[in-house]
Length: 300
Length: 316
Image (cartoon, rainbow over all chains, first blue to last red; front, side, top):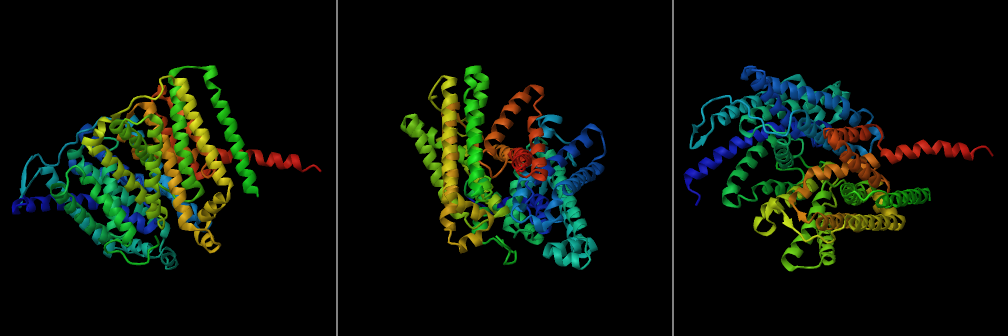
């Protein structure tokens, strides 16, 4: 049943899907690393990005090359506002919080997701929006696989952005500051790193990346208010698989999940393809909470 | 001691509220508004059961709607395939949800905070995906039809109020007993509770099972009321509603979830005519309450009343 050609096709398609997952999941991993919370509204940044791109490009006629960065900036601005207004108490007077901290984070991000979905539903409407594609070619041959032009173009942009993020985190001052704060918030602030600014930066970056993912995929998936739920769940799975808060882990887990899903849908069950990742998530949290590559000793 | 007084005060306030609401059919027999109150009561049971877990035991589960859906399917499937009478279907739905809750509760025992939230959310999504994709058994998104139990809205109204009263009394008795003390001790400091001899595994699992069974009970009852069971009952948004109601009403109090459920659901039906911005407003309210008034509406009420009481006691 599984011929060589089909396997190669599945692998390429899985990898490309994995790249898009990566764009989403890395933001979530960054937020978890720095703030130790799961942003349950992450999918809504994706949704906002998809709408921003569609509206700016299709309604206002802005060139597509500019519409993509606009979506990123929009997501980043939203992330910044959310961090400033809602996430501040998580670390501003952390000592007095204790027990309620985790619950607060879940409640607020969960409610934010509800707020954004319903706001867009009322303000723009529940109907799906079609966005203009970056490339008009409907079919492009990529090695052994056949893909839509938009998917190829989006994958290339994603690859470039991911490389940029890797360089930023590895070499720039702020990138190193982000990694320092994820390792040890107190230690980093004692060393003179502005942990508050890092938190804002990370939330904006994560919001921007998720929005960019939404913008890149909007010609394929069409923007609608609840479009973010699906990629959000994928990114939860990835962040757990890669080890909560680990960026390289999240990237590798994204590619892995993409491949596992594309093969699983053919080999195991198409009907239940969306449950594989969720089952992996539960198994990992129970038996290997540090993820595939995470360090030991994270509190569970 | 003061906890006991607080709990009794909350119980009396809840009882008064329920009595007041039970008089509604004397005023109106409007089918639509009685239906709204029935659904509110359904949410009140869900929110109260979730509150036992999240508010009293400190286990922040994101699966209450999934357990309601499981209870509903338990009733609908046994009715569809074995033709059981409603009361048996109700027991089966409650039992299945309770059993699954027992197993899940035992499994997630050691997880906390974001890890617990993610695990229960995944469980909820798996349950919903299985229900909506097992088309030859559940008919998928088409839903399973069910013979309605009663046809009179007033009877349904009192059935749901009876069920809610039953759940509230059960919770009150549970929380008033030693068990309530143990649960709150676990919430406040698990390690200290264990060191003092509280059987952590037993009580955490028990709380999870009881909460799930209550949610399943609500779901099964709702299945007979709606006479159609769809996977939509288990949507994460439904859990979002349950969380919103509890947070707005007051988490960790007996009355909070009941007040929250009725307030949120009834006003949202009201606001439906004004363009349907209700969910936006409530989500914003939840964020505001979580950010500024963490004890919810009930907490606001008690703090507003407290100084006056002290002032009244002082002039001696």
